[in-house]
Image (cartoon, rainbow, N blue to C red; front, side):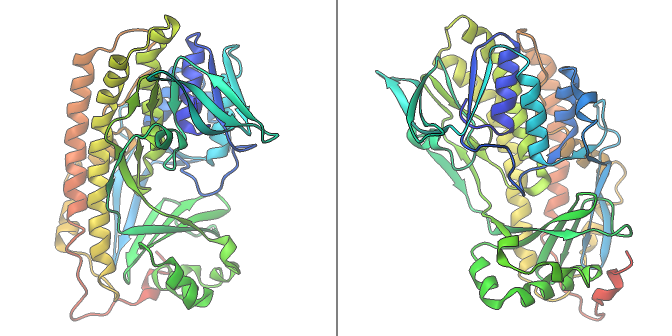
Length: 441
């Protein structure tokens, strides 16, 4: 298992739980990386419940988000309501990813067949004839070690060494945005829910971290260097323009080292596997941060991989047909989710075209009043397309899964409709929206 992120650690945990000997290679010495995907959706909480570790997980510090909303120009609205999703926990848990991974790996270490090697960076693949037979990795002392395996799982993210070494071709989908991540302190009277603020040709995402916000300023792709040339003072003014209630706090940004850029990508491998190798998570399908669903798609991939491959691995009989079946199962959810994300970015690009104050289109105001739309969006975001469930070696029940997929497909269809109406955003003609009007909202 190459990569100690959510996909790699969860897949390693599940396979070891089924008695498979697993080695997870993680190139860093710990899991601490700021500004990573930190939203644990109801679908992932359900997996933890099926494993019997959910209540212990929820003892860790976290925030519980039952709904998410946004502010489009001068219009505040609720988008997704998670309180009615068909899961035991009807909220999104916000938790730093390093806490999630530390917890999951500590649970996995209880199985004697689980082996986590930190500071082991994969540099190439081991080949045996036409089959991938393991990994070459650089260890803590910079020595190269060979790790042989019946199956290599590439779970090493959007810059995957594994997929590059295996010459797996990604299909790229143009993304017009990047994200600048930074921290800004939180006050008791600040919004408690996750808020997306769209105005003045900009968008600001705020994720509550109890005593601070993880803030994401969405910018047109490739403009970071121009923003740096304008200077920090100009960036602070940009943030205040869209979120005036941060007056007095933007001065916390004193240097560019406090600001991390996420170069947003949406891509998907044309083929996810070779003989002896398969990619999952961002290595197979890099997701945008839109909806915060990347970590949860990765977890679903890991669950499906364990369900479908544990028995062949125990029997040492994994075939290309097994790997093709896993790709086929998980490609549909990736396709559907990425289609929604691409539509979101198209809408965002149009919002960037209006540098002045925005007013929400009538379509947005109308659709958020449609009965059940917030529940449908909550299902689409919180559960997703084709949710997976932990199965101890049992065969997948295709009929039951197809019913679930159809239901989620309907919810995602509603989500596409909802997001599509953001595109015709326009500037107000007669009245001017005052930024300070949002200060008390």
